[in-house]
Image 1 (spheres, rainbow, N blue to C red):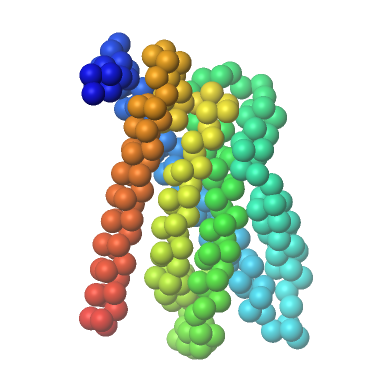
Image 2 (image 1 turned 90 degrees about the horizontal axis):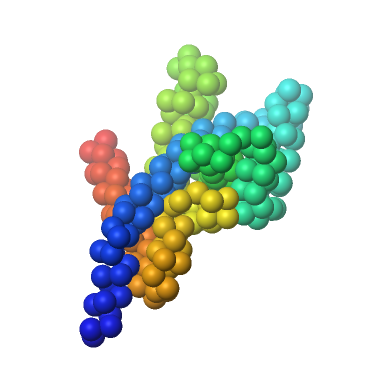
Length: 240
């Protein structure tokens, strides 16, 4: 027991080592949130292009839309077919090869890599949500005088969002955990902080167990928030 207490002191109290965890949480959440926002933007755009192409009449195919659909397919194939770590390494050591190794540049590199990667998965999630909406909804919006874009924005997307919310929550959780690999480019996230403490104190169990519990707590918070949002959406549907 005394040894465990001493290990806790070494890992958290000695030389203010707890600050590595505090800074690591901040970096992890920053990369995760910014990557999710970028992924949502990319994913929604790609999903709309893909869904719009699939919903076209076989006799009235738009060649411009077909071209962009091919680009989106290539993007999805490449991103989903290569490891996230490889994409991160390419982003930092190739795309940002001439950039100085500062926290700001490391974060930009990580956000771009994870955002582009997440966008591919979000695109398929959003596309499945759009395709799940009855075609009559689009026809009803157009019959009311709305343009295709307005109908998609005001009628289709809101309904699709409710259907795909659990899947988006899972993607958020996956993204949060995947950010732990930013240690390979030197970004001091939560995992890197634990590795630094382990190197300074020669204690492995306590720092790595600590970040495991921190990740678990963050995931539980996300699950709780998503549960609250889902319940509120169900209540609003009943009121309608």
